[in-house]
Image 1 (tube, helix red, strand yellow):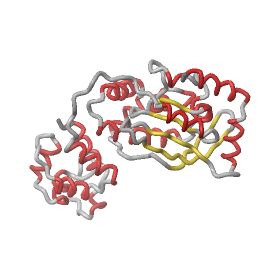
Image 2 (image 1 turned 120 degrees about the horizontal axis):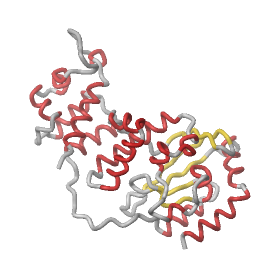
Image 3 (image 1 turned 135 degrees about the vertical axis):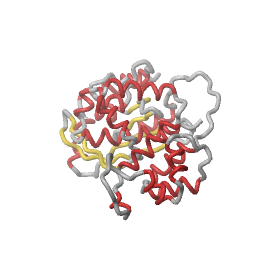
Image 4 (image 1 turned 30 degrees about the horizontal axis):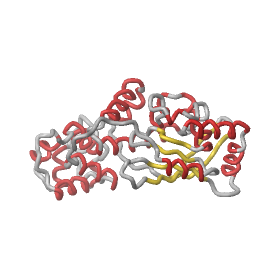
Length: 294
């Protein structure tokens, strides 16, 4: 079934971020709330106000792809937002699920991380839970945590939870507001795709209750894919870093992703990563991490 609440929220937030001037409409009279009125958006999309109102209220179940594309054009949606809107209108039918087993990283994926010794790399599941990391990935993102924790489902780290609830990890992000917005926008895409994921719903519920900042961001319904790009970090031991994030999706259907951080050879950030890798504790943590996966 469609998530009509999410659909209505999404359409309203996107109406609210546009002004009549943005779309070339002359505005008459005072406005009680910012953004386009329903009749203005309906006019731009070429549909009746009644039809659009029913769609926003979750009362219409026969929207055609052409109508949704027209609304996406009128709302000036990004590619990610357009895809998300289509997912809300026509969700993939849910299939019966077996009892969920804790996700694990395959041995081959772990070996890949080991081969990337000079590149911080981690494997995350669909809910941004950390399933594995190499030594440098651990030291870069969560050196204050037990290196063996990803192997224990009961207390494995979660990147989104750490960003909002772990002060040590939060301090790693000098531009925390931007990092938080990116994280929530990416999580929205996952939530739109995996509506029946109980553990994902529990994560979102936990963060909404425990973090007012997460709740505020979530209510704005951001949608964007931030799988690559520059990441600014402030590490407690090696200082400021400017790293390029690349994300590889595994092809085994698990939805797991490998996150890798790199810096140009000879740059200050590259030197900082080398210094972090040469820490005396790194060798001991390598041994501990290897033991935890046996």
